[in-house]
Length: 626
Image 1 (tube, rainbow, N blue to C red):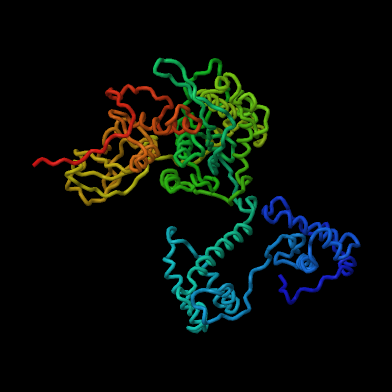
Image 2: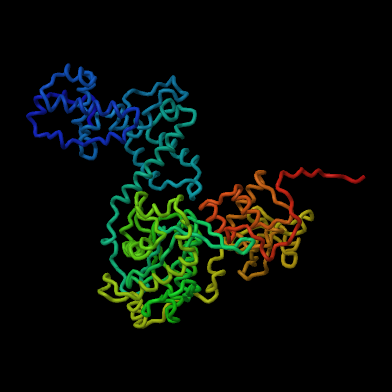
């Protein structure tokens, strides 16, 4: 953008004689402007139009719109300026205090101000005055990584920067060498911003998917896509209370994670996830379900039938446990989890293609399947929440509607219906594959394989081994805590038969499932399982998730919660989450996902203890016998 000295004085006659069309000026979306500048921006835009589109004088503009002569001409001159991208500023010049170019300092550094005052623009002045230093900074920005992502300590980068300044001729009495901290803050900010700029340029210049797909899938399992979709369906959970009566609890909308073959459009498997969003375990569950022989849910809906030509590929023993070459998925945090990458590389052996961010068309096949699911399932049942908040379908689900919960389907009914819908989809003709049925095309494709297929090894074909995570921990020992133990998720896990005090200080490997950490597995250096470790009671009495244990332990340590005498961990968690009489959808969903049920009914395995009133117990003091 031109500097102030290069700006030409605005002439109304010259503007009118030119071919410039005021309607083609870049506009300003006034409602988006900050509230304290919105009214002034609108007045300035109106003043510009009034002056240029009529024969009004500057004084008339000032009287009608309150815009002074200097401000009006400043906006007109600025509006005609050209930006770096080739566009003109236009009506954006009417926004108060808006800047359209970087600040380029011309004043030299004041050596007397060594405390940082008056340093604005010095770093830019330094870069622009030394092209070789700018080249070095760009190289560092492209390779920059924070320390937590494996990059070097920033002190090393800063020291190299100061050395580079000396090499280009910066004296000790010049910026940044004459500053106490040597410009470390502005250097860090510049490298981070510049690295983001280079990343954006890289994404902008990346080729489209059609250009990058030099080798499109030519047979089943060459390429597989996976993603999740939030179903627009209201759900309830039906449970029995202490008197044997049915109780309905409404839960949040669920996610369905689908694995689909790109070549045949055949759905290989899926999983249903509870919660506000799905995690990496839900994703791995969908992947496992697409590999393992498919198991149909227990039928509970009278008259519900599967299409005779439908089904899932893994129901055929020849297709079960067959792996694929590449997996296409988006950049969601659950997809990029370390455990997911480990499973895909070591147990499946496929390539991961995350594709460009914010490009759902890059995975058009699975997005089209979700559209099929919406049109043929979620928007066609009574419990549908509609496509938006103004949908008329929401009226019958309003809290004031009588027997609203009885209109919703249960979670178990949903599991059966989803399985039928996807199974029937696989057996029906698909327009995207010239009218073939996805399942028939898939089976025909794998039957023509000349080479033996790659399969998941038998050692990890059980769900426990497939989903298990491993972690290195150090064995500790204390007579106060009963001998040797390992710390995991705020608790001490032990087993006196396999973990002895002479193991103290030894680093071992443990395996655990996030859905149930009531026990963990101990492995030796060769990967052989030694035994099972358990936490103290009541944490070992009932299966529970890692999320439940971590949340409860934090609440206990913060003094926000206390166990009652003889209380199980599941009952305590329900009491902690539902402190009032109302169980909301969010609370019900959390209870169901982490504790297995919503209602607070006695469990068969719970020990019966006398009821203790809820209250703040007195602190115990340590006594001594002399």
